Length: 195
Image (cartoon, rainbow, N blue to C red; front, top):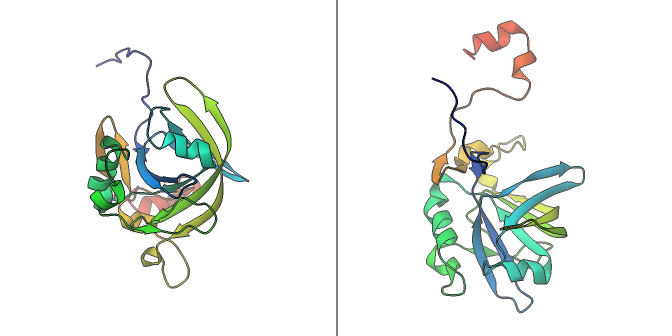
């Protein structure tokens, strides 16, 4: 079989499906599901999210220049999908999705308590790209759930079964295939692992 030419489009999958929490200057908060997100710099730590301007949460990000990226898990799959298909202008998504607000350390937007990782962000630039506007932000604080910490201070995010999105479907990650740099380790060590 050969390759078939597809029309140009977003085919960079899978992607993390994250819950982004936001708040306005009056203290109202909301959640939205975002898959157009990613790491863009390690020093300083920076991330991006892309949001349609018509989304209810968009004005909150514009108004405050802040948001929190909350990583999701297999257990949070229903809430993640729900927050992506319902509007905060119609319902309280926190209550409807049974999620708990926790105050952040630096930004006004709350953290999602049930998330294994919460990334507090401050917007440094907005790019109007077309259907989506990209908010480029500096990471100002990170919170991790202690239940995924070991007694030596190591954090094991993969134990939470992180959620990813691919072609309209959600998947939980799971199988460990190797570690960063395993391909250049001594041949014996990675062959013994069956990789």
